[in-house]
View 1: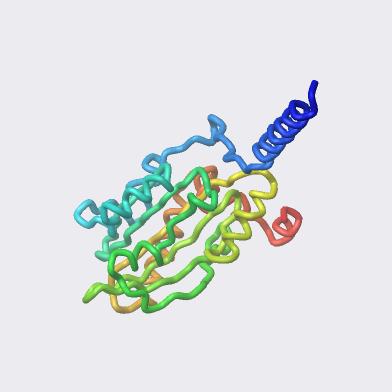
View 2 (view 1 turned 90 degrees about the horizontal axis):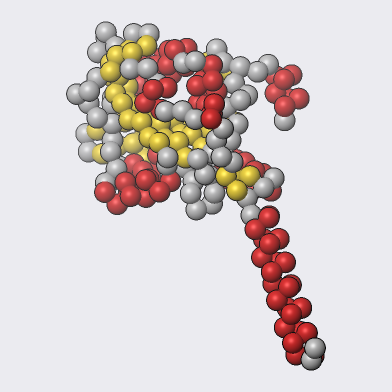
Length: 238
């Protein structure tokens, strides 16, 4: 074997080894087990507590260009409007993406609404107290002409609810270092009205009643595996 052929073989083996190592270290989405598969349409009841489906009002829908992007990001979406006997309406949107990689990650309401021409007039972090634990949420107010829309949303990355922004990125990075790409869920509720304090109170009641109507495994999908754990359990879990 001449020297040039030997060098070529060594380089080829090294490149193949590097490729195999890169493939082994590249995070991969974990396929859902049969018992983990679900349908948002079936999971969320059309009637619960004092709330019933109101098909006359459609939540904010994306423009065609945004819709194409969302179809790449999400495996399932759900958009509904509910009404109670007092005439209060809450718009519910849930999006699930099975692969939260850097290129395919949850499309936050701040982006969606602004892309539709809304102005964000208020943004703040908050905590929504539920019987299943405190949920870190983001409160927004989006405005377009006469339409004033207070919004509450939270996101779940893998098994935990996390705040958007740096905490979301760190959570995704932690999964990536473990060799796994997590799934993600975004739950958004909103109402139309000028009084944002009253709007958030209605939204919180709605979320409480919705969570109470879900089967435990479905509630875990929305709130993460940490939902309902005592502080000592959470410390041990993390």
